[in-house]
Length: 307
Image 1 (cartoon, rainbow, N blue to C red):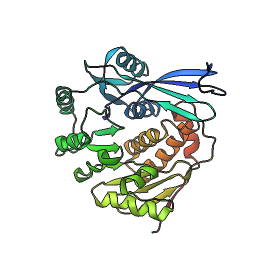
Image 2: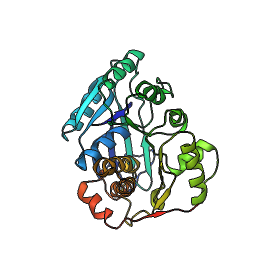
Image 3: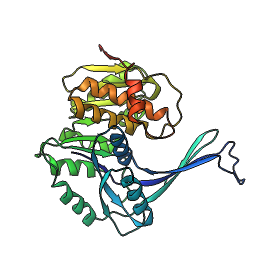
Image 4: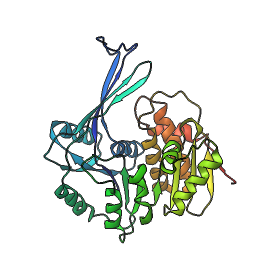
């Protein structure tokens, strides 16, 4: 089974305003509401690709119940922990001449809540996949992902981490199955400016040297790089298309990689499926569907990168 954990899921209120004017009353031309959070997005895309999974994490208040309802409405199983201090956040995302976001804080997660999550994770079995995805609330220590990996280290579980900064660096000693920073996050982690492909590969391999088994680097319109556990490096160009919405593209790449690996146990096919899925979400106003991914996948070719 595949499990996702979202520490700070949200209600995403998405609006389009034709010509936003600061300080004026503006009217939306389109608006819609989605359950959000990186792990939630991964669960939704996995489900769209026909891969069963269970969405876990923390919810609170009326917004938390609405997040759960909307996820279950998609026939995705959930196993959330309902915390009692605060409410799940509402994130406001506006698309006008520019894209703007205002993100809420979310509830307070206590140590008792963390222990309850660990107890739930006791049910995971060998070869299950656990996806730790996204940022964490301020009330949670930035070694929480590492703490979870340490707790599960002898169970043979494949753990995927999509995070950045210390939240990601702290997990490397526990040898995650896959990590997926983007090229900008990679630059920030090593405090360098990365523009050339060879330099991105160089620093991505440093993450592998620190413990990650596989490293997937998303690069938006420039495609992606995959450093396989066997040491080989592959590059895929992004397919051609018009970007409609960048929100969720990285999460979709993670979901696509995991779906491809779950179906084939082939790293190259997983990589290509990841690129196709991330692009399909970027080219859509919603998250990628199976049909959209399959249409793009036909034309994606990986190239082994010599460095």
